[in-house]
Amino acid sequence: GKIPSSLKTLESFAFTGCRALKSFEAPDSLARVGMCAFVECSSLETVILGQNVAVIEASAFADCGLLRRVDFSKVKYINYFDATAFDGTTPELEIVAPVGNPRFTSDGFLLSQDGKRINAYLGKRGGEIAIPEGVERIENEFFWRFAEVETIRLPKSLRFIGDRAFYRCEALKRVVIPEDSALETIGANAFSE
Image 1 (cartoon, rainbow, N blue to C red):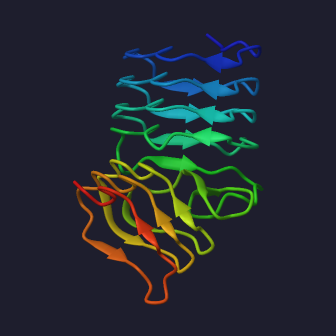
Image 2 (cartoon, rainbow, N blue to C red; image 1 turned 90 degrees about the vertical axis):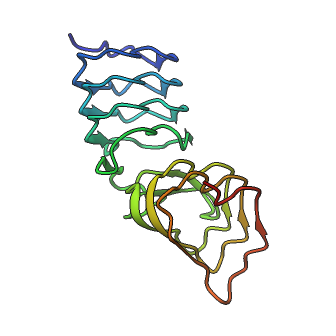
C-alpha cells in the first residue's frame, strides 16, 4: 500500500525485521526517520526520501544487506544525520545527494552553514575519502565502522579529530595529513580498530 501523506515520523524500530519489504518511498511530509527504523530489512533495495526529511537517527537502515540505492535528491535540509545510519550495508550503496543545495558537496558531504563542520556524509563508504578544505572539525565517531575505507585525506584547515572518529575503519592503510596542517587535536582511539 501507499504511505499516507500525513506521516511525519517513523519511530524507532518501525519496520525492523520486515524481511519482505523491497522498497520504501517516503511522502514529503516525513520529517524524521527514527533509530533502527529499518534495521534488518534484509530485502530492502531502494529508499526514496521526501523533501522534508530533516533527521535520520542511529542505525536507521543498518544491516539492510541488499540496500543498493538511497535517494536524497528531493531533500531540502538535513538537520541531523547519524553516522551509523547505514552500518552493515554494502560498500556499493549508491547515495543520491540532494540537488541544488549549496551545503552538499559533489562527493557527498553535507557541511554546516559556515562550512567548518561536517553534518552528514552521504558519499562512498570505501576506497578514498577526501575531507573538503575549510572543514575544521570531525566529530566523535563520525566515520565509525566505515570498514572499506582505505585512504583518508585531511585538509589543511582541519584542527580537531574527535574520539573514535575513524574507529573500526578496518581497511584503512593511509592517512594523508598536509605538512602545513592546522591540526591540533587527535582524539582518543581516533583511528583504532
